[in-house]
Length: 202
Image (cartoon, rainbow, N blue to C red; front, side):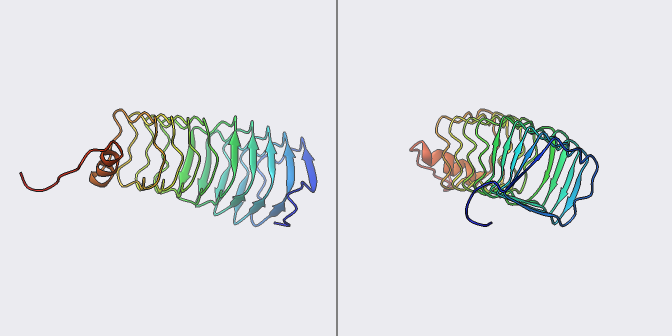
């Protein structure tokens, strides 16, 4: 990034439907109502960009970086994010399901209040992410790193948290009814309530 934080150019209303954007690089560009439906990227970099009311429907992104980007009113319906880096990006009023996510680094992303019902986020690096008030009911978070994540008032009803790292995460007032956890997760949650976990022989 250039470090100024200012948007350098704006792309408005363009039709990039089905374009191949492999290896492209865009820094601090504002995309407004751009149609990126069925776009394919591989190794592309979008740094400090803003996406306002754009469409990423059915798009496929392989090892692409959206670093420090802002997504507002943008649709990712049926999109695929495979090994992508979204560090420090913000999502507001976005459509994020159904979406296919395969791993990737989403550290520090802001997904406050996002609807991720039933989504599979297994193995994603969500350290220090803000998922407060997000709806993750029935979501699969197996092996997901949620260390230091903000999960206050998140709906994790029936979510699969087995193998997930929850160390330092804020689960205050989170709805964990029916959530599945492994022994380590159960111990951590029990300790947060002040319980003393005794796994010695009976």
